[in-house]
Amino acid sequence: MAKKPVKKTASKGTTLKQLEAAEKKAAAAVKKARDAAKKAGDKAKAAAEKAKGKSTKAAKATAKKAKEAVRKAKTAVNQAVKSHDSAKSKLADAKATAAKQAALEKAVAKFEKDWAAKEAKKKAAADKKAAAKAKKKAAADKKKAAAKAKAAAAKAKKKAAADKKKAAAKARAAAAKAKAKAKKKPAKKKAPAKKKAPAKKKAPAKKKAPAKKKAPAKKKAPAKKKAPAKKRVAKKKK
Image 1: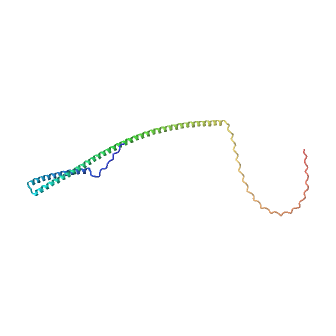
Image 2: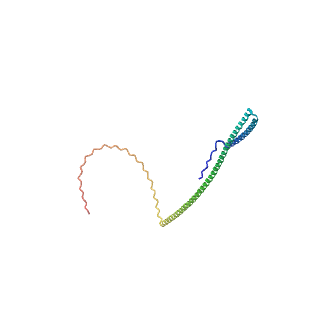
């Protein structure tokens, strides 16, 4: 698997535009220094020519001064050239870095595009596989449901046939029973039971008369002696 290129953050230092401006400024400084050096050289030559005819102390001092100015001008030119070279080097490095960064960003963009395309392709394949699986499951479920419905219909048909057979047998039995009953003589109807007469109401109970006072008991007479019991004569058997 390809590694994703890492984007480098832009440097917070000097920008490319600033470096370009610095390089232009350094180039201008070189030109200015060279112009100054040329002027100083021309001036020194003129002073030297003038000093040849005169051996005065002042002429010699002027020539010496002009020579020193030329030396300083040359030093300034060298410094300006060095500064310009440094600015050019920095600008070249910055341009190389910018080109490298642009190439890196381009590579990152390409990688992200390729990655997105790969992921989309992968997702499409997964979706296709899932759809095929769902279709297969739906077909299996449909087949299963059809088999179940067929079995239920067969069971219902079998039950209906059994119920019909049972009902026919029951009807035949009922018809046979009715036929047998029709052959028998009709039983005599019982006479309706006589209604009982309503019970007579009881007469109200008579009030008891108040009990009479008992008379004083008479003295008992002395008991008579019992006569001796007569002997029974046994009857003769005929």
